[in-house]
Length: 306
Ligand code: CP
Ligand code: NVA
Image (cartoon, rainbow, N blue to C red; front, side, top):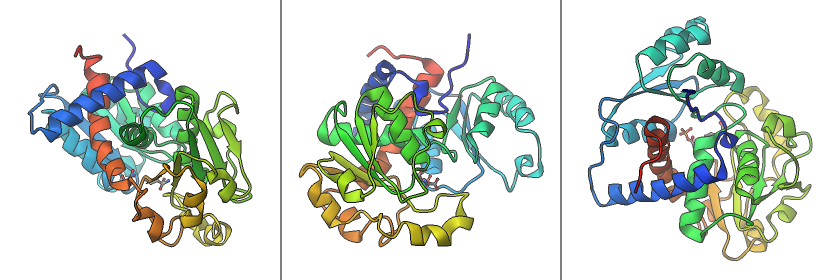
């Protein structure tokens, strides 16, 4: 039987997402009612971090404990991964001692090679190209606040990074639109984003135009992890790509604001917006916990009959 991995958003179908969002609702409700739910007793999650994290580590580790299992944290600095052990060898060994693996790393190719040599499901906890667990949480959060995302418009303001690419993949799978505005030279690369076509996104030179009528406005840091050497050039290039009150005012009056966090107030977003009434960033962060519990349950146990 082939193992199911979650390496990019398009690894699952729309129907699988419908199941996962319903399952997340149930798992979140149980958690809020202090109901113990331990379907993963004796299961071990290994978390491999080659980049820093607060939310991803916390949500996966807490989530696995809450499902009755345990979680082990490895990072590049303290393991042989940082000393040149081939990723294929690491995958063989780690997957013989665990039931599921989450990896945060650099190139997507690294996680693909790990998964190809793994005996257990592998989850992408962020690569240079994609951040599927975050978009899973973001769409669940949109559904909680505004209902179905199909046919809606998401405005992406800023870098065409791992978050942007994943929004674009999600738009294809779940049938909504993304209006993207990046500074010149930082445009979406459709092949790197792993897109099937260009039907679900439109590029705008002016971020105000991208936000016009949008149902969700979102952004991310100007410099992602791994691109620190470009920081100075990016600070200059991105100065006009700051989500502010004017951008929110041209969006749908019901629009929500999201940011995967960590945020830099005064750079990609003003304090007025991220701390304002349309911002749902804290729900968005919390929902990482609930969607990833549903994801781990699905990868390990398949569909649970309600
Ligand atoms: N949003 C997110 O992935 O946060 P961390 O980098 O803190 O894990
Ligand atoms: N695009 C950011 C997201 C951090 C959660 C990065 O890759 O650093």
